[in-house]
Image (cartoon, rainbow, N blue to C red):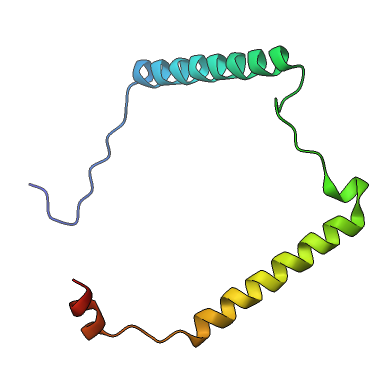
Amino acid sequence: MRSEGDSVVVKADSGHNLWFERRRAEVNRLRAGRLGAVAAGSGIANPRPQPSNAAGDRAALMADIAARRRHAQLVARHALDAPVPTAAAYRLAS
């Protein structure tokens, strides 16, 4: 009889493992084929590439970063100033 502390080790047979390895290889091969077809059909990996702001217009990029930073600071400031909801407020809203 086994005690509660004994562990049971189950070993899969080699045929079972071989099937999973072949299936995984087939799925990976099909996935690579689909990705290759998409890339070959469009000529590039990304069919709608976004131009880089860093390369051309650095001043506009820096202005955009500053505007985003100001917006984030404003949102954070308003979040700190907002009253903390209480359990009574939740009951009234229901």
